[in-house]
Length: 620
Image 1 (tube, rainbow, N blue to C red):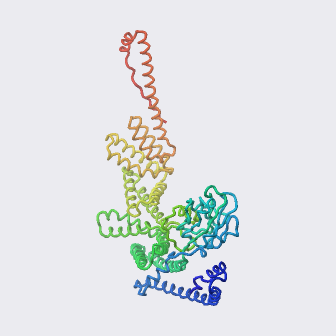
Image 2 (image 1 turned 180 degrees about the horizontal axis):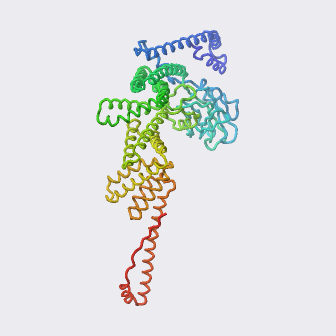
Image 3 (image 1 turned 45 degrees about the vertical axis):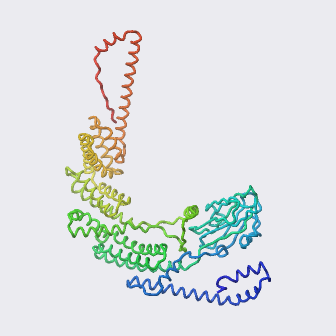
């Protein structure tokens, strides 16, 4: 037991320091050396036993997952708790780091780690050039790093310390912390609860007390996490979980490809699998880190093949999900009239879409499996620097990408079908707005307010409009411009009635889908024609400006904006001209008043008839 706990190394240090004065020290060292081979054998046997226990535990978990029978092994939860713990104990200084380097006097570097506060390392150099580099063992995440100082060192005592991190000694560039040392301090905590591994940590003495040049450091203490079986257990658990649920997902995909109505049962199947894993995690796994690792693996194994399968076109050229969403839209009117079969069908579709969309598994995984480290966020700077220095990891495609493409296809199909059948109707634009409201309502019911699905809705409308012939596109553009003209004139007639203005605003939303299309040039031409008529009739320019600002993206040449700008400039010039006329009249009357001819001129002014006002509109 003493050999396994590192008694040999500790005894060697004691004998090196105190020599033969230690009672029975040499005999104890010989005894430990003779027991070393038995200690190694004990370690190997312990490793084999634990490896066998891990395999038994994994087998029980997989059997429980297949049969849904309860696990009856005594203390199974305690065993898993010990396997999943990432940092329940701390590792002392000599097991955390490989070596220590100093900026000067390297022969004194050993005094930093000898555990004796009476010895010290003293630097030799210019101010701000003193540093200590600590090379950590691979994977060791620092729980706490402290520096021992002494107030009796006076001007040699550090006053300000900068802690840096880097991948190697040549690339130490990330600031981890800055510490000011009080003159009465004995032990200063430099780092605490780090969230990532730094191969090299540099302690840089920026300033000494009382303006001192050289510095003295009495010691360094480093505490790290205890090595556990968690990385091995996590890898094996996640690998088996992924294999099990990938196989199950491919089985479901095969059933859906043979009968796409099986897609309606997918929610119940996914929900049952996820609920089973959640109950297992709540009962046996000790913390959120282990539960999240299991849950994410389960979800990735299920969702990736399923989404790829249900969004891929079948022999008929239609994917199962596209068929399902099309059926949902067809059933919306029936469901609203509470027809039982349609309502049940749409309810199942909504539950499935919520499950697939609202849980996204596209977050990147770390490159290596590392022991989880609990952090209570005491050191905010450490957390920010560690996150900022993390290596960039290529993000996997989102699980919603294929679903948004299916939704775009459904919208384009609906819009194309409507345009082909109704483009000549007198109330075409009103029907178009109703189609938009119906599709947007369906989108919000199925997917919520996620921006990617709103973009897919817009792209679907744009794709349907792009398939119009040239003459049909001209007719449709004129219909849009005329419809907006009718609503603006209604708003004038109703004197700004709130309900009328709201109807006008709703009619503008689907028109925005023209932006970016060739159709927008034709729409702009007709809109400019109707706008000119309204401006010549002296309408409400504030309303015109608000409408143009709302649908400004539909005017690639910005002709309506220029017309309103010209009108505004003209009104400003007319106002200035009116003020100029008043100034001239005041000046003329002032001269008459000085000459005493005001009364005579007043009689003449009464005779002169007032000139009619003429207002000229210059519209581009």
